[in-house]
Amino acid sequence: MASAAFWVVSALAWWHGLPSKPPTDNWRWGVFGMGMGLLSVYWMFRVSPAPDPIPGQCPKCGYDLTGNASGVCPECGTRVG
Image 1 (cartoon, rainbow, N blue to C red):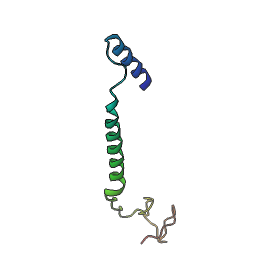
Image 2: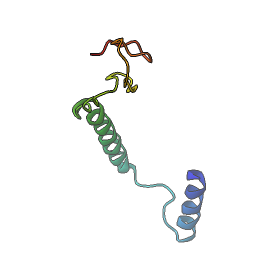
Image 3: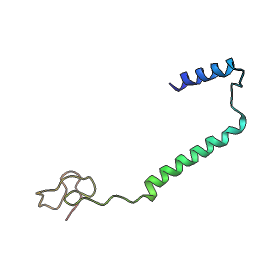
Image 4: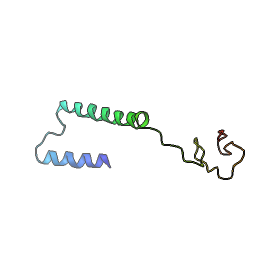
């Protein structure tokens, strides 16, 4: 889909006499966008706090432990209690 959009824009640019390639200093916007994307991924996984475990569920896998008297999650083997 992106390649089709590129060809349409290129054809329109050629028809109107515009340059077919952007100026060479636009690479800075790409570097800026990549940096912001990496920063947001870093923030999402490192800065935001982990959600609190829900009572009655395994804190590791979220399995419902209602009625479990063994103290071990049958899904992942984590000790709970």
